[in-house]
Length: 204
Length: 195
Image 1 (cartoon, helix red, strand yellow):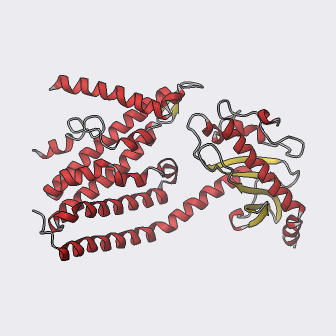
Image 2 (spheres, one colour):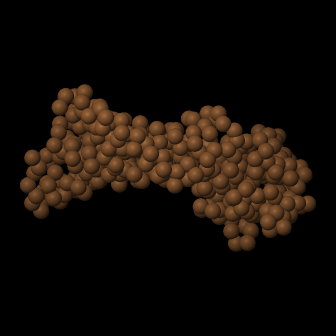
Image 3 (cartoon, chains in turn brown, orange):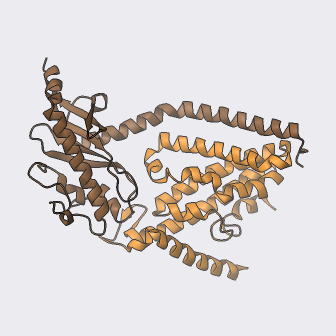
């Protein structure tokens, strides 16, 4: 049934199988590279449109890197008729099951949090994953339209103003840390005059 | 064995989950909801059909001593292709299954069918075997996922009928073992009666 196992034909057959498989993988990678990039972009764009006021530019083309405490954060600028209306800031705090990749949007007009969204996470299903819930009255709802300057951004257990999810304090805490990090990034961005530069440049 | 029997034996007699008890890692890991279980089952089904066909076609050219590495290379190539395709065209499914798809490579079902069936049979029989076993796996995962989803989140296929709480334990790992165990008892009871 099977061919005889001599050294040469073992090397040859295994080698040629590997060669054919790598060629196939190369082709598959080439074919799918474009749609994968598009799907990732569509996902980010979808989340951005969710966390900032309505805009007419393409925020994923308008990215600024801002450094806070030695880490660089991605900030997407959303603008409406060349005026910046919102900042979507990508942060990744560490949750219970690994990093929570999330995005926090700020309203450029009053500096309030516009909305928040979770891009990907690996929190416990049924407990921690409620941080990503879109339902009415969910955990993330309390951040909507919140003014981060007048509220203490930590969970009640730590003396803050955020109600944690029952049985998911670590996830709630991580999410809150993400929001406050994003706020720091926002302050750095606005305070350092970067925002003025951007809006100044777009005033023409 | 008739062609029809080849196709159907994977669903009951050689059901990979309840009768052969193979591929437990994806079974326990991905069945948090009916849709997730089905997605994993279908991904495995594709890999099984393709790898079974290719293995049966090339088996007689492969020297005996390197057959396992050869099968693994073939299987992992198909798994990677399936993974890339899901990532490109069904990104929402990729979000939930992403972690488990590479694990199809080491799923005993796929290598087991290549070693126990495909390398001794022709391409068509192997494809039928792949479809049968794959369907059996998909069905089992969907049923486990459905039971866990109903008990754990009070919904079926994403459609919520019970608000607002389910029994959380069924969504977590211990629930997977419980549901699998009880379903296996039920399966054994039903199938032994028939025989």
